[in-house]
Length: 163
Image (cartoon, rainbow, N blue to C red; front, side, top):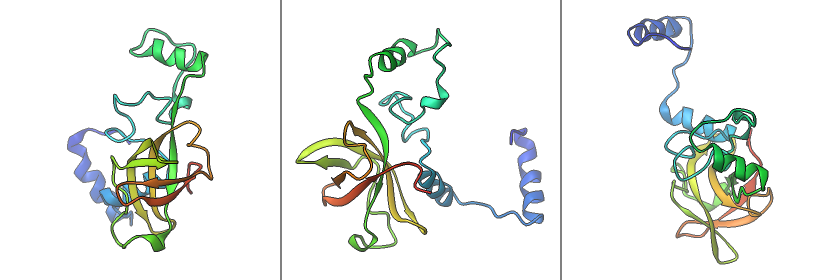
């Protein structure tokens, strides 16, 4: 919904009166992570291209003259996307609830090498501890086993969305 800022309070009151539940920021973020959706200040930053952040469907191959267009075109033409957004799932028994075991910025390792970093994390009531991470190829493939953070928390790479 796009509305004028001064109309927001009345809209919210009307939605609540009609029985709509108001989502907390934490609940929204959990649903976003479950859906595998990138967010500003997490996956959509200057550190990652839209292709790396899982936004290929939002990019037109025909539109030109936008900031970063040459880099995007090169990545597509020469298959130079070397990192991709992936899901990480952790065994719920390996962490202390209720806090999410992973934090944005945690380094992801495989075979003793850094292969990426967590960009978002959530404790899902349906799936347990989850995270989004930008991982180097070929480690973004579902089923890969990785370790995360200083505690070397074991995780499995999963296809997105989780749900």
